[in-house]
Amino acid sequence: MNDFSDNGLRALWRDSEAAFAPLPIEEVKQQAARFGDAIQRRNRREYIATAFVVIVFAIYTIVFTEPLVRFGSLLVIAGAFVVAWQLARRTSRPDPDAEAQDISGYYRARLVREEHMLARVGRWYLAPFIPGLLLFLLGQAKASGMGGSLVFLLVAGLQALVFGGVWILNRRAAAMLRDRIDRIDRTRRFEGDT
Image (tube, rainbow, N blue to C red; front, side, top):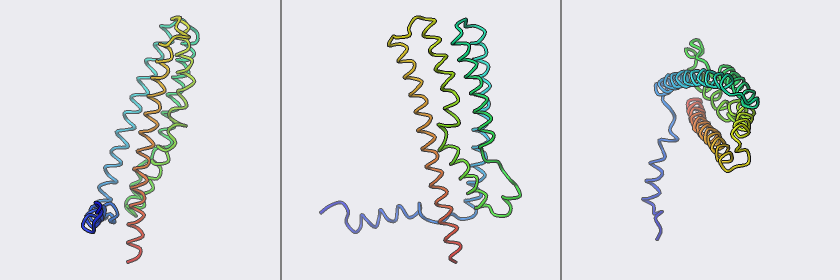
């Protein structure tokens, strides 16, 4: 006999029941408040990181004499501003009037907006940095004489791994938000049936 006896299936069903249970309105309110706080903290960190990137790469344009490094640094700075602008444009914002009318609809709309933003992070968050970083790395390789070396490939590969990790983590977060959206949709259908 296998591990999937009647008792095992019942236990599995009971354990998964909470994932499919509708959300009480108080829990939706708490999750919406925590979600809004998390968005504000994330945006604050991103804007601080943007300022740091701008300062560091501005210093690079002054310190380094290689034209490719300077031009790459300027492109990275431009990419950082594009990312900050895109974050401000794409992020969900609190709306006290909407929240008072329909908290679950309001929370769902914010989740949908954030999910779309995170699912497309490769286009608006990572892509603006790629041209500048490539030129910067090529300029560094040219200036140091390691253009064809294994060291250059390792540095470029490390950058690719970091970008890939950011992309994967954001795609995973988008999937988690889709699960929350689905749970809210089930709750709304359940409440509409009664």
